[in-house]
Image (tube, rainbow, N blue to C red):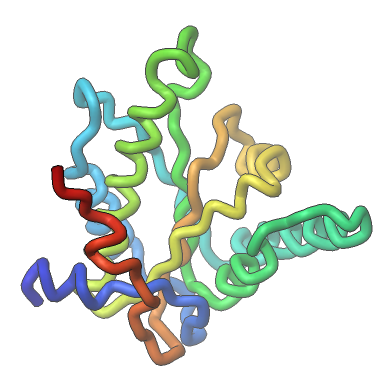
Length: 187
């Protein structure tokens, strides 16, 4: 598949076929593709924690407990419920963290550029997965359970994104996009 075709065909997948894992080799290859993403000053501000099987199930159950607490308090929880249901069916979860988010002067100097780099890193993984027929979902709802995620993973760093990966079990279609005139401004 040509890169332009992969970009045009990529969609977010929320339901996956039952599978134990897409395989360690595939995950390593996808993360290696992510590592080819550009980053300011070549900082490469990313690390990935790969979770499957029982550990994934424990995390999803924790997420549903957190979701119930939000509902009981009648607080906003974004699309956490949709994300958790996708995580339930995905065979693999990749937790993307920034190992540099604790450094002095981080929020003043590096935070925005690191987030841009992490976005490129994640997108490389999504496109690589699409190119080999896998489905993915890029989730940021982890922000609604950040402290629980850090405790679960036993890490000091914030989780920047979770990527669900698996064999798609739904018809994938591109979501509507803004028109080019809404996005591209000529001067």
